[in-house]
Image (cartoon, rainbow, N blue to C red):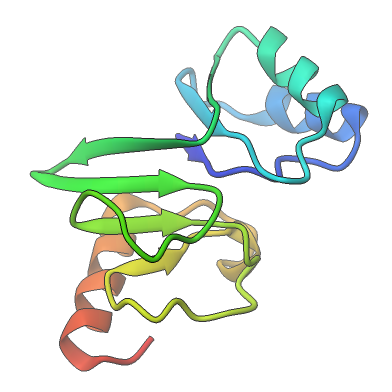
Amino acid sequence: MWLLGDIAFTKDTCEDFLCKLKCNNINIIWGNHDHQQIRSVIKKHPKVKFHAYAHVLGINGYKLMLCHYPMLAWTGDYHLFGHWHCRGVHPALNAFDVGVDGNGFMPWEWDELYARLVKIQTTGRR
Protein backbone atom coordinates (compact mmCIF):
# COMPACT_ATOMS: atom_id res chain seq x y z
CA MET A 1 0.00 0.00 0.00
CA TRP A 2 1.23 3.49 -0.85
CA LEU A 3 -0.09 6.62 0.89
CA LEU A 4 0.96 9.89 -0.74
CA GLY A 5 0.88 12.22 2.24
CA ASP A 6 -1.56 14.12 4.44
CA ILE A 7 -2.23 11.02 6.52
CA ALA A 8 -4.04 12.68 9.44
CA PHE A 9 -4.39 16.01 11.21
CA THR A 10 -3.85 14.78 14.78
CA LYS A 11 -1.58 12.26 16.45
CA ASP A 12 -4.56 10.28 17.78
CA THR A 13 -6.31 10.00 14.41
CA CYS A 14 -3.00 8.97 12.82
CA GLU A 15 -2.48 6.17 15.36
CA ASP A 16 -6.08 5.02 14.97
CA PHE A 17 -5.85 5.05 11.16
CA LEU A 18 -2.59 3.08 11.03
CA CYS A 19 -3.91 0.47 13.49
CA LYS A 20 -6.97 -0.14 11.32
CA LEU A 21 -4.94 -0.87 8.18
CA LYS A 22 -4.74 -4.59 7.53
CA CYS A 23 -1.82 -4.27 5.12
CA ASN A 24 1.59 -5.44 6.37
CA ASN A 25 3.59 -3.37 3.88
CA ILE A 26 2.68 0.33 4.13
CA ASN A 27 4.72 2.98 2.32
CA ILE A 28 4.16 6.64 3.12
CA ILE A 29 5.47 9.72 1.35
CA TRP A 30 5.35 12.86 3.50
CA GLY A 31 2.67 15.42 2.75
CA ASN A 32 2.60 19.09 3.68
CA HIS A 33 0.06 18.45 6.49
CA ASP A 34 2.13 15.65 8.05
CA HIS A 35 3.63 17.76 10.84
CA GLN A 36 6.20 16.52 13.35
CA GLN A 37 3.71 14.79 15.71
CA ILE A 38 2.23 12.85 12.78
CA ARG A 39 5.69 11.95 11.49
CA SER A 40 6.76 10.66 14.91
CA VAL A 41 3.75 8.28 14.98
CA ILE A 42 4.45 7.09 11.43
CA LYS A 43 8.16 6.52 12.07
CA LYS A 44 7.40 4.29 15.09
CA HIS A 45 4.82 2.12 13.32
CA PRO A 46 6.29 -1.35 12.61
CA LYS A 47 4.51 -1.86 9.26
CA VAL A 48 5.48 1.52 7.77
CA LYS A 49 8.37 2.49 5.54
CA PHE A 50 8.49 6.24 4.95
CA HIS A 51 9.88 8.19 2.02
CA ALA A 52 10.80 11.84 2.33
CA TYR A 53 9.73 13.22 -1.04
CA ALA A 54 9.15 10.93 -4.00
CA HIS A 55 9.60 7.37 -5.14
CA VAL A 56 9.70 5.61 -8.53
CA LEU A 57 7.79 2.34 -8.36
CA GLY A 58 7.79 -0.38 -11.02
CA ILE A 59 4.52 -2.25 -11.48
CA ASN A 60 3.47 -4.48 -14.39
CA GLY A 61 6.24 -3.06 -16.59
CA TYR A 62 5.32 0.59 -15.93
CA LYS A 63 7.32 3.15 -14.00
CA LEU A 64 5.18 5.24 -11.64
CA MET A 65 6.47 8.49 -10.15
CA LEU A 66 4.82 8.75 -6.73
CA CYS A 67 4.93 12.08 -4.92
CA HIS A 68 2.66 14.04 -2.63
CA TYR A 69 2.96 17.08 -4.89
CA PRO A 70 1.99 17.27 -8.57
CA MET A 71 4.95 17.67 -10.93
CA LEU A 72 5.18 19.07 -14.43
CA ALA A 73 8.12 16.84 -15.38
CA TRP A 74 9.06 13.42 -14.01
CA THR A 75 10.77 10.12 -14.78
CA GLY A 76 8.43 7.27 -15.67
CA ASP A 77 5.24 6.41 -17.49
CA TYR A 78 2.74 7.83 -15.01
CA HIS A 79 2.77 10.38 -12.20
CA LEU A 80 0.50 9.80 -9.19
CA PHE A 81 0.05 12.46 -6.52
CA GLY A 82 -2.38 13.58 -3.81
CA HIS A 83 -1.69 17.18 -2.74
CA TRP A 84 -4.69 18.74 -4.52
CA HIS A 85 -7.26 16.59 -2.67
CA CYS A 86 -9.08 16.12 -5.98
CA ARG A 87 -9.77 19.84 -6.39
CA GLY A 88 -7.77 20.33 -9.59
CA VAL A 89 -6.92 18.65 -12.88
CA HIS A 90 -3.30 18.05 -13.90
CA PRO A 91 -2.57 19.25 -17.46
CA ALA A 92 -0.74 16.03 -18.38
CA LEU A 93 -2.87 13.08 -19.44
CA ASN A 94 -0.51 10.62 -17.74
CA ALA A 95 -0.73 12.27 -14.30
CA PHE A 96 -3.50 11.61 -11.81
CA ASP A 97 -4.56 12.74 -8.33
CA VAL A 98 -5.01 9.51 -6.38
CA GLY A 99 -6.20 11.07 -3.14
CA VAL A 100 -8.84 8.99 -1.35
CA ASP A 101 -11.02 12.07 -1.05
CA GLY A 102 -11.78 11.72 -4.77
CA ASN A 103 -12.49 7.98 -4.57
CA GLY A 104 -15.14 7.64 -1.86
CA PHE A 105 -12.37 7.65 0.79
CA MET A 106 -11.16 4.28 -0.47
CA PRO A 107 -7.70 3.41 -1.76
CA TRP A 108 -7.22 2.89 -5.49
CA GLU A 109 -6.51 -0.65 -6.70
CA TRP A 110 -3.87 -0.80 -9.45
CA ASP A 111 -6.17 -2.42 -12.08
CA GLU A 112 -8.87 0.20 -11.52
CA LEU A 113 -6.34 3.02 -11.59
CA TYR A 114 -4.63 1.70 -14.72
CA ALA A 115 -7.97 1.41 -16.56
CA ARG A 116 -8.75 5.01 -15.58
CA LEU A 117 -5.33 6.22 -16.82
CA VAL A 118 -5.74 4.41 -20.16
CA LYS A 119 -9.21 5.92 -20.59
CA ILE A 120 -7.86 9.41 -19.90
CA GLN A 121 -5.05 8.98 -22.40
CA THR A 122 -7.27 7.56 -25.16
CA THR A 123 -10.22 9.93 -24.77
CA GLY A 124 -8.45 13.01 -23.41
CA ARG A 125 -11.19 13.22 -20.75
CA ARG A 126 -10.96 12.58 -17.05
